[in-house]
Image (cartoon, rainbow, N blue to C red):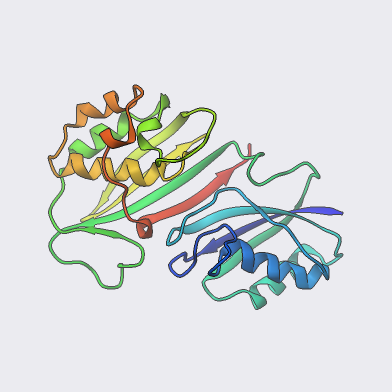
Length: 245
């Protein structure tokens, strides 16, 4: 039995998300089906993060245990031959037996892409949240910087989530402006359900002048979900990478 680490990228537009569902195509389900052809039997894949419907990945990581003897280069090439064009295996690596894509991860980085301005670019619509008005980027940057460090992110967790605690540590929370296209990037040791999208929705409300930048700190003091901003739409969100060291 071998343990493999699979790094992959995908356009999540048409999928029900990473996780296998009763209805609709999932990235996990398609990867498991492709691997099963090599293994000759049922395969279970574990992902580092359960991206939602419409969310993309530049560096999702999955782990799987297989008996098949194909080398990793052949496996990567064979998987890409079977998977649809909107999912690509970037690398397959043989790793230690106790490696687990989710539980071995030390941090994850997500990026959210926005464009602000009157006219939307039709070629970006599946990958960017378009805001039709100009945003106060400086105020958004000020609010984003507050999120670094260890905080209680309960205000940015979807209702109905069940986790043992809501404190997470962020090592990066930064907004970059590239000529009207904004990229918000956040790195942390863990994320709550819909947390990044809720943070982005709150930052946009700051940028629109609906809330003050210095109010972000108060949201990290045990506030409720209703006190933070709306949940941003899924298409602007990318899982950038997962770090294990």
